[in-house]
Image 1 (cartoon, rainbow, N blue to C red):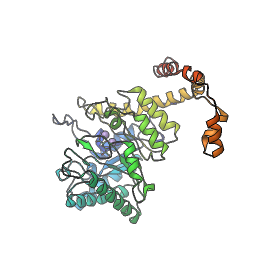
Image 2: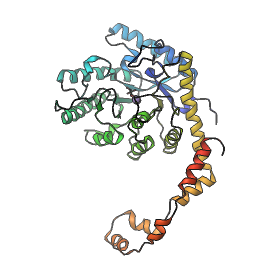
Image 3: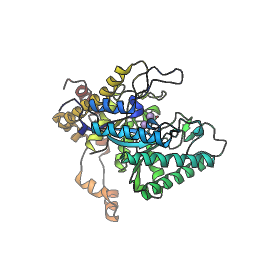
Image 4: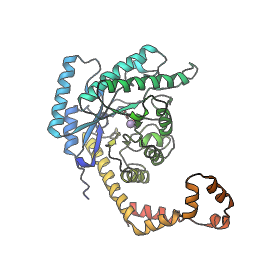
Length: 387
Ligand code: GCO
Ligand code: MN
Ligand code: MN
């Protein structure tokens, strides 16, 4: 297995990720902005499969129709020349101060209506570029102050907007799959729908839930001290993993968007293993950026690093699945009992009676060591390259 990225690996980057100029709340940009067409050429040369974008990553806010036409034509030209696809599109509903107190969830009906207008236009752009997936990240959908009484209303507004936009996509024949991207906080004090579980619960309240899934992000669960592999597993279990944002993050910090695998290698390993073992076939999308310290060369090192680390971990996941000792330990850990599994699988009065009459050897259950220390150590040795 080669460690050089190929389009078939389905690695994708947001225009805003490698294009991040290194601005932070305390300091000015440290790098020049990159032209989208240049970004496409560089990513293609590195072996990426596609790009994703917010409307305004490509077409600046307030651009005239003529300007829009020229920009989109140039961009399409770069896509054609390189063979890169646009794999996901989304709306910037967070930069313009108009969205300072929310977009779809704003308490101001005018802002909500403007957010719908902007999103329909961005969906038109996404469809024109052939994006199959449309992401909703509620960057400003949250609050610092709950005294306005918007907490329940916000959810109703959010639902209304998503139902509206789903109908718009269908009426235009766009056929988008929608992915909600949860985040616990930042830029708002608290964001609505902060976790994968809350997004999944919310989706079941929409008019056409079958068109909606989630776009979980490694950093977002990690910021809140939660396990990203567990969040990912819940999305997979629900059949709702429509897209994924890969990066890294130290727990309990501001949103760092570190290079994939830069911080928590074990978490990254189990993320890759889940994606590969589950048969997820969507883009492996990196939503991260180079450190503010870096120049442009550092940006491409960052992008190569994300992809290479993924490929190394994919190789390690295969090795893990083929490692006899590890697989024996897992088989021993997952204790089987045909009779009890048969009785527990589905309820019947008879199964219930038999279970109630069963005598368990509790002493054996209490004293059994499941072998997890050995299993975890072997995982660490495998990751460190000595197995
Ligand atoms: C963040 C988010 C965003 C979204 C992007 C696409 O923390 O800023 O992860 O990068 O993913 O807006 O929806
Ligand atoms: Mn993020
Ligand atoms: Mn993201």
